Structures are given as structure tokens and as C-alpha cells.
Length: 123
Image 1 (cartoon, rainbow, N blue to C red):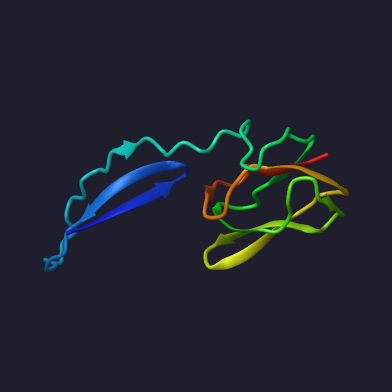
Image 2: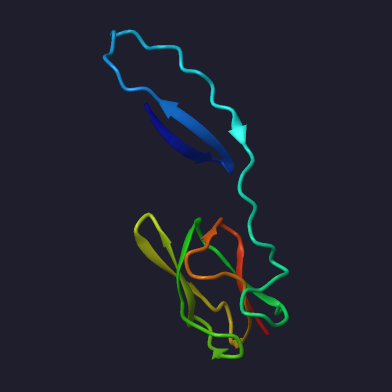
């Protein structure tokens, strides 16, 4: 038997798959019970300290924080990469939506993030 954790539409399921010979007829699959999804880090507690800015940089896709390119207090221009997410073995730059100064970095390298999560803020 193999144990897997699967997330579907934000619901986390623990699934056990049994290996064996097939009889040709599909077996009745037991229903997996959802378990509580892991809680995301609160957005009000930026990882790098400092106050939240008014311009949000949100995750375009679910993934993992691969690299933080900017630091709090750094001036950035529209289109500058602030951090990079990794999703399905692709590196996805998260860029400044407009000119500003980085007010907070709300994630750390290696953190899992959901689509739409606030990653950083600018002033």
C-alpha cells in the first residue's frame, strides 16, 4: 500500500492506494475523508518586518517560493522581479505592478503559497 496526500480545490485528502492484481472489474473505491488544510502564514506578519504597503504583489499560481529578488526598502520599477515562484518545475517571476518601494516581503524561500496569496507589498 502507498499513502498519498492530494489537494483538490483547496481540500486536502489522505489517500491509501493498494497495489494488487486487477480482476477486470472496477473495485468500489473507499471515499477519502477531507482533512483540514494547512493554515497559511498570516498576511499581517511580514517575514522581513516592517509595515504593509498599499500595493499588493499576489501569487499568480499556487507553488513554492523559489527565490526572493528584492529586499524591504528597495526601490523597484514596474515589471521588476520581486520574487520567483516555482510551480510544476517552472520558475514564475512575480513582478512589481507599478513603480514603488518594497514595504514588506510576506514569504520566505521554500514557503508553499496558494494562488492569490499576498507575497509582498509596495508603497
